[in-house]
Structures are given as structure tokens and as C-alpha cells.
Image 1 (cartoon, rainbow, N blue to C red):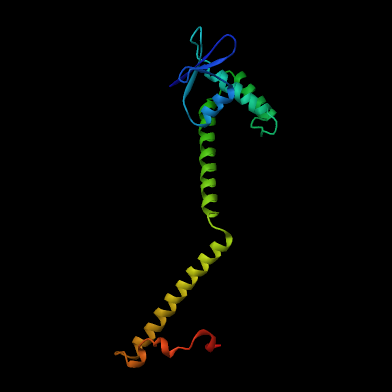
Image 2: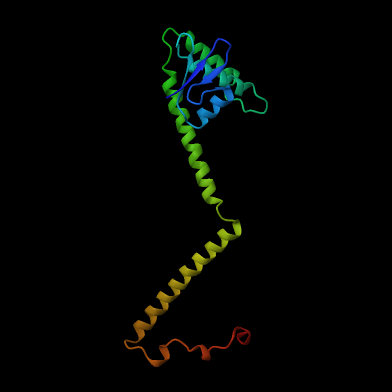
Length: 172
């Protein structure tokens, strides 16, 4: 596990990379799903939750960022803390958030698969599939009719020779 030390001067030091890091660097670690722990350099106290909450606060206050926590939701959280026996909210929130993230990822994958071709390419594929279907259906229908009327193929059942069919411009 990656260890980040927080010093009294509020600076964060990444012990793995031997360099000072910012909250934005830690946010990037979270997005990359790298596990880390933030500890107080002097006492060794685990400060990870506090730092993660600080990152969330910065994102909530950032310009142009979408708000995740409305005032009403924050007020409800405060009321939960004030309950005689607080609800086991963490587990529900973790499960719900995980489910939402998985669904979002599935939707993005489905969207990218749907858009892998241009609309014209998709129409062409559908048209080709329909053509193959009708060719098979017509071939099966004609073959069944011939077999029912005759048991032996005759010379007239043979495929026409290319020389017997006129070029495209002469057929019109």
C-alpha cells in the first residue's frame, strides 16, 4: 500500500515516489484505483478519510463541476449523525454508488459499440443481412417447388451460362 505522509506544514509526501504531492495528485491516484493511506508524519494517525473528504470538498466548490451533494442531502447526513443509533449508511452508499458506476460503465460500452460504425455503414449492414435472408428464403422456396414437381433434374435446370445472359446495359 502506498503511504503518503502529512507534515505539520500541511504538505503531503509520497514515500513511494519520494516527492511532495498535491490533493490533485491524490485525486488522480483515486481515479487510477491505486490504494494509498495518508498518515500523520509525527503521530502515525490515519488521516486518509480527512484527506478524501477534503478532495470532495474541493471538487464540490470547483467552478463548472457538477454538485453531487445538495444542501438537502448534506442536512440529511447531519441528521443521521444526530440519531441515537445512526443508520449503517456507509454500506448502502457504497453498494449504491458501486452499482451506479457499473451501470454507467455498461451504458458507455453499449454506446461505443452502437456507434462503432457510421449510420450509413449500419444501414448497409442491415441491407446486406436482409438481402441474404431473402436470397436464402427464395432459394429454399424455389428448390422445394422444383423437387416437388420433378424427381430428376433436367438439362433446363442447369445454371445459365454467362454467355446466355446479356450484359447489364442490354437488359434494360
